[in-house]
Length: 190
Image (cartoon, rainbow, N blue to C red; front, side):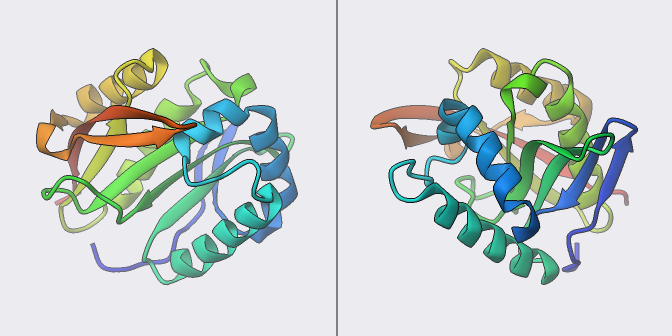
């Protein structure tokens, strides 16, 4: 896929993905604080004691700039009926598998979990990314995170993904190192 700017994706009447940017700083900070343990597992680079607003602001500014250039793609999951932030999903180039082009990560606000938000969002962004040349997307999951594992397994069944043990890696979250399993999905509309 050639580089293209991150674009909005309307999934249905209750879920829209909007390109991440600084305009959602306060709403995203509030959502992060509400579900902090989940956020720290999804984004271990965020340190709660190091000025959360500053870290989120820098992340959103970089994400918007790089999204416009097509270098990475992050979306805010929004309920368009209320404009409430439901989560975050995105692709970056920080991969562990030598076979993958992109890494896919996501986080869903606790009150929006178990409603299919992650599954619908993953399907929509894989479809969006797969328009053009084939690309391989890496998904990582802590095998002890049963909800996350279920979501990844659903994506694998839907998109025909495979396990890649060579991409497994340990991630430190809250001082604990946990081995995350790597899965690969190839997407393309060709």
